[in-house]
Image (cartoon, rainbow, N blue to C red; front, top):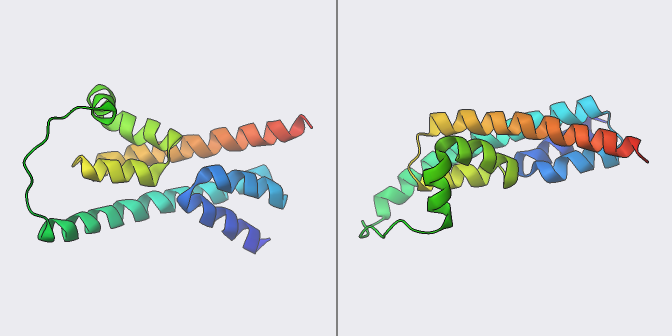
Length: 140
């Protein structure tokens, strides 16, 4: 059972959409799936934040400054409309925390604020999808 829990937590580090169904496929109780995916998801947020900052510093040493391009496109529109909350919470709910943090590093977002919103997104995402999975299996 420990290996199953660690597998769910490891999957949640990268993608919660894979971790929660795997937990149900392993036959784990819903509360164990929630806790394992929550711990794995939060670990992924902190690892991505730490590595994103380190990678940014390494690249800044070797990167030559480019002329600034006009800020157009869908991602800039979303960024201008929703800001850190949209990037951290909504981005985590849709594409995942590592991607949201990567985009945030690219936009030079304060990582402490983004970290808070990504953590809230992970907690909400784990609770929501574990509940949907639990009651969805009850229908069968």
